[in-house]
Image 1: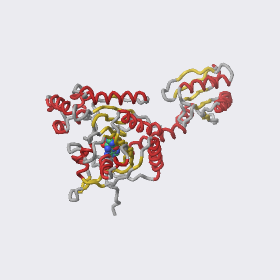
Image 2: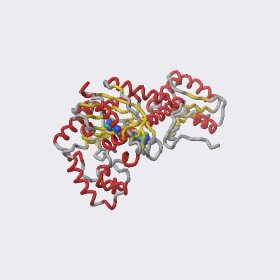
Image 3: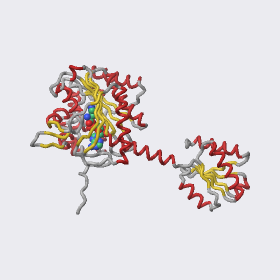
Image 4: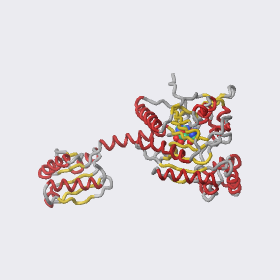
Amino acid sequence: MTKLQAVNGFKDILPEQIHLWQRLEACATEVCRRFGMREIRTPILEKTELFVRSIGEATDVVEKEMYTFPDKGITMRPEATASIMRAFIEHGMHVQQPVQRLYTMGAMFRHERPQKGRLRQFHQFDAEIIGPVEPQVDAELIALGQMLFDELGLDVSLELNSLGCPVCRPPFRQKLIERLEKVQDQLCSDCRRRLHTNPLRVLDCKKPECRALVADAPSMQESLCPDCDRHFTAVRATLDSLGLRYNLNRFMVRGLDYYTRTTFEFITNQLGAQAAVGGGGRYDGLIEELGGPAVSGIGFAMGMERIVLLMEQQEQAEVAAAGRMDVYLAALGPEALAHCTVLAQLLRKRGLRVAIDYSDRSLKAQMKIAGRVQARYTLILGAQEWEQKAAILRDMETQEQKPFSLIGNTEEQCEGLVEILHDSNSM
Ligand code: HAM
């Protein structure tokens, strides 16, 4: 009988990984608590129209990635923002409280080509602040996202852009179309198709030929209307005052149509092509567009699988570092061995991880042991070195060898080694 397997792009989360998921969920919940966010859970199925109207008809998500049951007019949610806005409107939440700070975690579904960090069922941690228009709130929400990565000890960078508003974006869009039309034959087939439906997407096409063609395309940041410009300046000033670093990226457009003004992405260079671990932005017209009150909002979503991959890599690096010795003492001959036995003890008292072998093996055999224990340095002390009072210190990463003086007593030699190891940051 053939064994049945999970559907392509749908993955089990096994007991071996669950501690990382639980740590991420607990950390996200704790960070949300500090920012006064309340949890909301919405259904997996929504009316297809909700996503078409919010995400936009000319987006990849709506055009080709949704899991839709056409006869029933329903779709499995590809993201959480549209559903949260639907719930916000349906329950008149703005009447109870003019500012709503909400978060959710759960499975989303997009029919994309699966690869590392890209699934068809994936999980998002999503946070939304609905109500305030002030630019400080944009920075506050970004700070929430950054705090999660900081708490998890993950290194990510922040890309920032502004996409303007219904006043300044249409003229910019027109300017961009005119520029791109001149080179349309050289654009990739996707971008040629998008040129008139969603020209801004051409700006963040990852294909090298398109990147080169848009390098000197007009910039939205330079085409903002005075209100959007003031807003963006204030967002940046607040981020600066909070000590949050960012890169201005005029090519970052985001794949969903509801954005206005501030947009941002958290990026890693450790996951290959799936570099975005999170992204979001302001969506000032969305709630009204969905039949709700004229209320602004800003939010982001993080890809939980991608964060878990980063946590896994971090854990592996920690395990590897924990099993790694600072120095291996390769002693050849009885005098050298007796000396290294004492030196090892002194170094260990100073907190160093020291390996030594007492069986008087050949240097070649000892170098193999040094490799096996992943020693950062090897101190080679053979009969000749002992005679000359100068051992050889080999940097196992760079393969560089330097003489290490044995003049002075063993304590002084120990100090010398401790200093070198401190400098190489291996402690
Ligand atoms: P998004 O950029 O489409 O934004 O997705 C947010 C994050 O979800 C991405 O940065 C990525 O980490 C993760 N993600 C997306 N697709 C996949 C996939 N197929 N496999 C694994 N991870 C994936 C949104 O969804 C917006 N709703 C964010 C937002 C909230 N904007 C305002 N509020």
